[in-house]
Length: 228
Ligand code: IPE
Ligand code: IPE
Ligand code: MG
Image (tube, protein in one colour):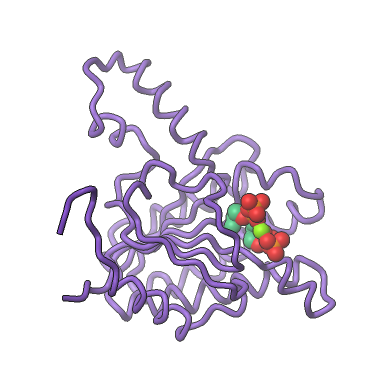
């Protein structure tokens, strides 16, 4: 028996910089190409019947990068929000962002909030963009809220209630560009996710690559600690 299409796919969209370098171009050129890839992959996921797509776009550690690169990433995200509005509405996509607000400009926060508001009743795929996201930060924020709310008898369900969003856990985690690490992404939620790593850099990730990842997932034997 093979598994069906995953309900929730999470992607660490890595390798934009290396892709650009291999073409003798600046890193920001890679980030621009990466935004185009996201647009295409979101469409394929919607067509395949995937319900949730979570993508890692900017980590709490990415602030360490050169100011020009950080500024370019902020600008690119803002442009993405503006340009995609129509398409997201047309394709019935619900758009949400997970991450801390600290350090993100008021402008950008406003754009995020507007798009979340505008798309909140859409019933197709949910696009969850992890932006200024760190999983340790998410867990710390949850613990602080648990204390503030004076919760007692903490269970896994209570911890989940205080995480940034309430999507089902991803069945499949994809990382592009070959690194065998998690880089502070969804530490709680990927407890039992199936991991797929490809050498392909994110800007070159396409429908065939997505299908390869899904085909690999379908053949997995998910035991969740049990015996089959
Ligand atoms: C992923 O690509 C995008 C972000 C982290 C914002 P990178 O920028 O990390 O590209 P590489 O890993 O340096 O090639
Ligand atoms: C993870 O990639 C973050 C995003 C894809 C947004 P990084 O490029 O920041 O991760 P490391 O530094 O290689 O672990
Ligand atoms: Mg990287």
